Length: 307
Ligand code: NCD
Image 1 (tube, rainbow, N blue to C red):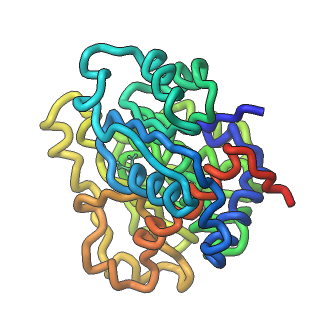
Image 2 (cartoon, rainbow, N blue to C red):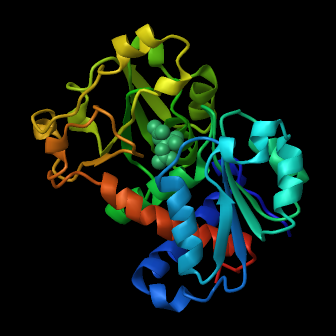
Image 3 (cartoon, rainbow, N blue to C red):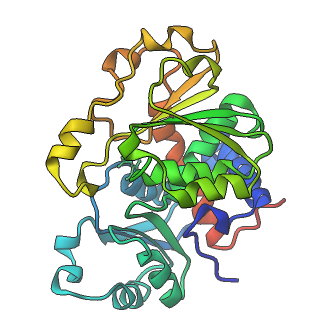
């Protein structure tokens, strides 16, 4: 059956558990998977800037023995001539077996999936969703804590526009006993639909404007950058951009096994002095991102992962 990934909730909790298991297995035995997608092609269509997401998708497909083709910016494809998402997808699927697309418009992945006759993956749409970053984050948390339930996750920074934060909340809210600590300036709080989602799944949350007092209760602190490209005016961005800067001093009161995560790119929100701190996990996330995308590609191409 043809499957797409637009929203992390397109995958059941059981499917996510199976993908995490497969990701772990690929990390342990990468050689076993080097031909698993031989003769298959992945198209990456990135109509918004990206380093990690696009390259990790491409590295994932190459490490599975497949090949890649794609566009790395809107300017270099017919999107710049006004081609619709639907027509782009109809075209690209003549050449590729699976497609990953990043698009500035919320909802573009839904249009794409409606027209897709090959598996379609949302690699980030506007301010809304980024399910493959969430899979990366879930793998990171799972490797660290051995489970996902019962964790207290602090999310800090631009919780209004940051799609990685919205997606991670959606991904984690389904696990029992999860508590979110939402740390942001008043102007950058999470949208109401995200709060509704937390409540609907029976997770709990609190909101605050400062990180210092809440750090001791966190199992993970997920820092995010202020999303400059989503602001209507530059003055607001400049006023808010340095609202939070994580330093080693701030981490002194954290639990001993607390971890610091970030989807990257980082701008100023984590001081480089934190990079050597044993809690820093953001470059591990980058690494795990390739392995979980390998697992996802295999699953969407039809691998039975429940074995
Ligand atoms: C993020 C994104 O594009 O949403 N980056 C990523 O995919 N790892 C985060 C960001 O741009 O702030």
